Amino acid sequence: MYRFLPKHSTVLHAVACPPGCSRWPRGRTTSQAVRIWTDPDFDAQQQAFYYGRVIEIPTPRWTAYDAQRFNLTMSEEVPMTTTERAYTSPIWYTP
Image 1: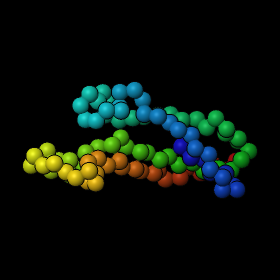
Image 2: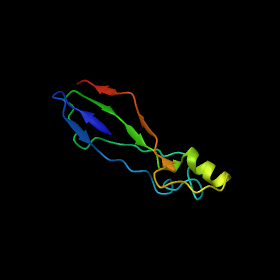
Image 3: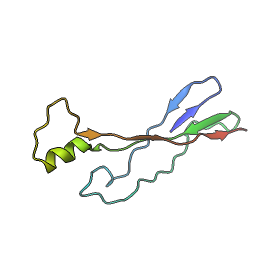
């Protein structure tokens, strides 16, 4: 989670995926990763806003599927995985 303060400083708090959701696609034991997060530096008198950033575990790219389906050997420069990213809408806190 990111916390933005009035002077535009940024504080990053890493929230890791729970055990069992780090493998793709076989062996995965959960269909979603849910975390509850509390700001350790929360100050009820200070205005701030928060947003979450999600980074997905690397997943096969279309080039990996083509290589497997057509029994191809891809060049080293061809990426075989991709990592998707997403951001939440901001959550505003005003004292």
